[in-house]
Amino acid sequence: MNRLFEGFLDDSGTYRAAQVYWERLFLSSLPHIFIEKELKIQYANNEDNDGNPIFSATCLPLELAVRVIQQPVGDADDLDLDCWIDSVSLKPGVEIKELVISCCLSEENQPDVKRILRNWFTKGKVVAAKNPDEVRRWEGRTLSYSPELCLH
Amino acid sequence: MAGQSPPNRGRVQAQGPKTEESVAWPPPTDPPTKAEVLEMLNLLWAKLSSRQQDDRRQCFVDARKWVQERPAKGVDALYKKPFTNRKMRGGVRVDIEVLFGKACVDDPPSPDEPDEPDEPDDTSEDGQT
Image (cartoon, rainbow over all chains, first blue to last red; front, side, top):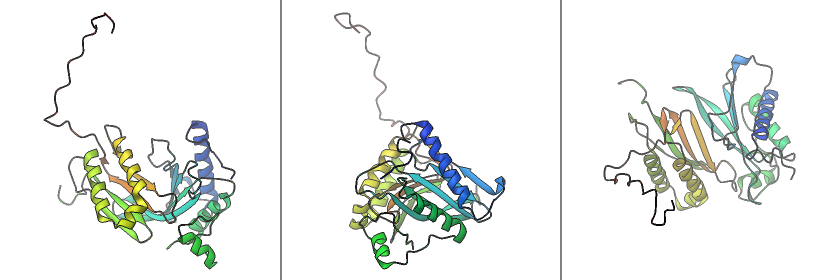
């Protein structure tokens, strides 16, 4: 597994580089170019610099948000990529959908992460897997490498 | 204050496929303290089935540690902290969400707590400090 930004928790330069990476990925996932005031890019009020979250952003016209948790390398049987849908409050009484990505970023799962983000901001959802085997692996407790996604 | 949102609002919740349980802090004037948030985690734990508890055992350990390590002033909204089970898919986790105001401030000293002990003498019998 070729990890990206592997030492991000130990080195502030690597941490910042990872944040810039996520920001670029977010911008490139949007269906078209938005002006700056239509986007809210931030680092989620996290002073701990622990990667949880490392990045968050909202596209106001699309009413969609994303939050990224970058995980350090963990146990051998830890998932390298997971995601779920949450919500975030823009102001009292106004909530929008938020995609949360939790991953230990690598060259291998990078294409999946890009696809998840692109689907989120172009289709407003994470696309379900078509292959039943992939679905079973995704829903089960076993590992699946670079899985197709199936969220409910 | 009628008609206004409570100044401090948030919740702890257990989330994941087929799981959605939460304990929200009531609308206190003062932000919930660390001990109060830890107690809410206890209440949340008690709401879960044994399977749900098993899936989130380490999540609760991590969440409790995080609460105890917050600075004395607590954390300000908006702050969402998930503690995930990295071995399971679909966001199996415990969340701590500070939605308005703040939370996890230090507990006030107990009135029964003894006063700080006097400073020890700066010299011992052999003259060493």
